[in-house]
Structure formats: structure tokens, C-alpha cells
Image 1 (tube, rainbow, N blue to C red):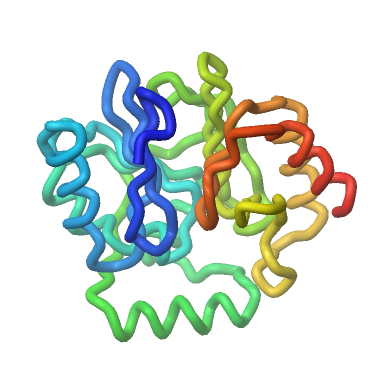
Image 2: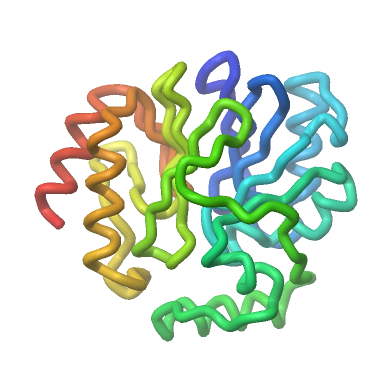
Length: 222
């Protein structure tokens, strides 16, 4: 689905996946395991592009519903994989996560019962790095290495799982999926201060109207 001329939302991958079309094509998150074909078909059918046109795959955080098809997409696209430094060793399988027990249990089950393969990211991101025309905003709280990506040219922010929009209201992760509540509040403040025009989250629907006001409202409840 086209959000803007240069931003597309790929449905049917469980956790939302986006294509950002700037000077290069960037994929944001990879969905659950086995969803690589959904992404490649969208690229080919809707954008008339080739898999190798994806130059970078950016991960908003390490959870398997966002990294699940990463290994296969790397083979299909040969894109560079970029993740924030705190989550890199978890994505590669070299380190266990500090997630709440519920999330660790779900991730373990998904790893066992799917074709999930760990893979080491190529690029270690830091605060204020640029990925094409998007700036990296470190937003810990859901995971230590959670990030948002903000494009100041069009006011679009990709927030991963730091915030969600269900078509009615903006919310944060449920309490059992919060790694650090105080860090999460500070992260939402960062997003609030940017006053974005459009919020694209890891779950839920695009928020395209009254975006800044709705994010500010949820920050005031945290």
C-alpha cells in the first residue's frame, strides 16, 4: 500500500514492513519467518523493481516478528543489514536477550517451530546516523536497541514497536513487553519533540492525521 509516493507499507507479513524510496531503496524490518516472498512480490508487482534494488535492510529491534525473514532476504537481495549496536549480538544469536519472560518464551517457540536462522548485521547504527534520508533515533524501552527512523523531508517516522496505532488511538507496548519503562517514556518524548506528520509503527495502522497531537497525548499518560 502506498502511504506516500516514496513510502510503501507491505501488508501480510505479521509485523509491519515498509519500503522507503530515497536515493536508494531501504526495507524497514523483515516480518515473521517465511514472509520474504510477500516482500519480493510487492517490490516486483507494485514498484516494478528487482530484489537487488533493496540496498539496506534496517531493523527497528531484534524481535523475531521483525527479523524473521532476514536470512532469506539477505540471500535474495544482498542488501546490507543495519541494526542498533545494543541489539546486534541478539540478532546474530551471539547473545541472549534481556526481554521480559513472556517475550523470551514466545521468541524461543518461534525459533524452534519456524525456519528462523540467525544472521549477523553488517552495519552497527548509532544515534543520529543517516540511512539514506532517514535519521536514526535511539528509542530504548521495548528493547535496549530499539530505534525509530525519521525523515525530516516528509515528516514520516517509523517507530517500530515503541508506539502503535489501532485506527483509533495511539498506545505503547503492553507492560509485559516493556524492557525498561523509564527508558520507554524518554523515547516517546524524543518522538513527541520531532512533531512528525505521519507515524508508521511495527503493528497496527498508519497514523496520518493529527499525528503529533495523538503522540503527545499518549506521552502524557506514561
